Length: 130
Image 1 (tube, helix red, strand yellow):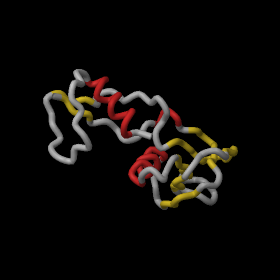
Image 2 (tube, helix red, strand yellow):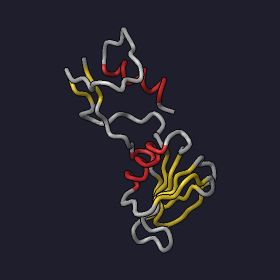
Image 3 (cartoon, one colour):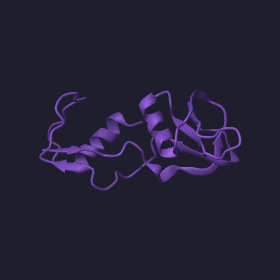
Image 4 (cartoon, rainbow, N blue to C red):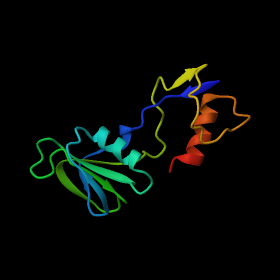
């Protein structure tokens, strides 16, 4: 038995000095980092497909986190960091798996005949990560 305890965010697809314009779903204030903004997007649910975070010294969007329904329109904008809810083909970070650990309850589904961590991750990504 093994469990995965991985970070919610994947910063491999963050774009520095880029704004995903339009498609605003929700705006949050006082969000410290792009990573925190990405985590808020993941927690918000399927409606959030991307996000934009303003640096603390941005002239009008300091520490704001804009949750986006899409990311089709991009433009250059200093001191903004944009990214996707989940990075495509993102690798799980190190130290994710925990052997002989079961997180009791709240199971989404049980998949039989999976014999490796990689197989379990693959099943989860195919079925549950957009």
